[in-house]
Image (tube, rainbow, N blue to C red; front, side, top):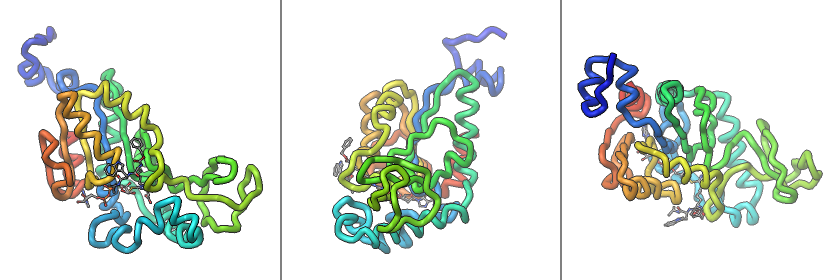
Length: 252
Ligand code: BV8
């Protein structure tokens, strides 16, 4: 049938889902945080059971903390790495993978910017994932920079497979370090016609600044979280509830 682009709502009402996609945003950027993995059984950072409630982030998630006591830092990340095989993606992760597949099929683009280091988005089938704070299943040599897939525990004795020195560290972006992939994040934000933030407290920069960037560009900004985040007022739409329920509902 003929599409009347001046009256997209009418077209979408009569022509079903395909046309719905055509008149909806086509270039979406989604930012996720620990809250999207909470329903998979992964602890968040700032909730009552959170990792930063039980551990001082300045001791376990900074270069200074690692220099002071590398064994303490290894123990913190070894425990979280060991949990990974025991958890699975939840309906929120799968819904985002489906949204990406549909958008790409319809000629759009989807970029998933995640602060999470648990790989659950990749395991759920998301393709374009930018893990800006690193990944628990990799290790990096502080001596030569070699990055390698790493499933086991790390210790101060672990030799680097490339140079042999024992300076291995978790492949994690700590406080005071530069997040990864931010050029790609900014490029995706420049093209985006919709921004959504899911399961993040909006308290760690530069990720927490993306909603303000989206506001400057005048695009819709959707918050999906258990409760209002630190920057809830910068969004145009807010939905509160468990990610495993509200994300699939939003995508449908
Ligand atoms: C940098 C990896 C230069 C470790 C992490 C501006 C102002 C002030 C300070 C700064 C600033 N800009 C930069 C800084 C410094 C600092 C910073 O932001 N400090 C804050 C604390 C003020 N930032 C940095 O140092 C960053 N580097 O700035 O470099 C630069 C500047 C510009 C451009 C480029 C470079 C590096 C930060 C990286 C730190 N590393 N993580 C690890 O994983 O072990 S950060 C840490 O917080 C977490 O790891 C996580 O990645 C991040 C965000 O946390 P969330 O994911 O949001 O988790 P949180 O627990 O807080 O919230 C969970 C939310 O989920 C809650 O709202 C809750 O209600 C909700 N929830 C719970 N259950 C559910 C749910 N939602 C839905 N369903 C549920 N079931």
